[in-house]
Image (cartoon, rainbow, N blue to C red; front, side):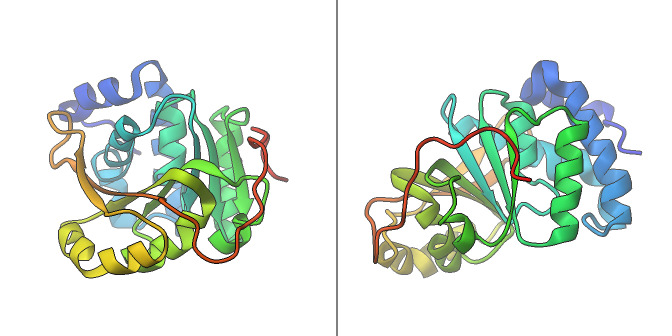
Length: 232
């Protein structure tokens, strides 16, 4: 069971609002099917609300209204599915290469009633870059790779002026210092560190923002704004 701890109820209401019941249903899916299928470790089940749902939901404060969001390496839907729950105005594409994970994601999207705003793309970021999902306004990634590799995979998924939001841990500042030059070579601006959810969650969520300033290498095909229907 993924019971919402009383001490987190206020933060959960602020972040999910009227969709708190949908967030609770997703938390239950993670704590049951997510654990059984190996998407969430058994020891994570008691911490689903603070470590996963609230941690991801705070990132919504960096995303403009009505944006299209591409979530790379979505796994169990973190942060993409959480953002779709917290922000029904967003059009979210969950990008995940592993079949067992995409099956879970498709089932979760249907069960949570999110088929109008969320689609699932099975494939790597490089494959998604050639799909109708591109360009997105915002690309998100959580615990996927160091910033240099992440920028190489994610920046091609957005147009000039689009943004990568990478959820990071305590070493984020060190990563920025180490990989800023590589990010620049890949067309990104100077990485900026944000602390999301200050005053709502403790600790705040650490997010590194990279704006795509220019195209590097051959231009990729772009398309009109994607359909909100799921890829089957």
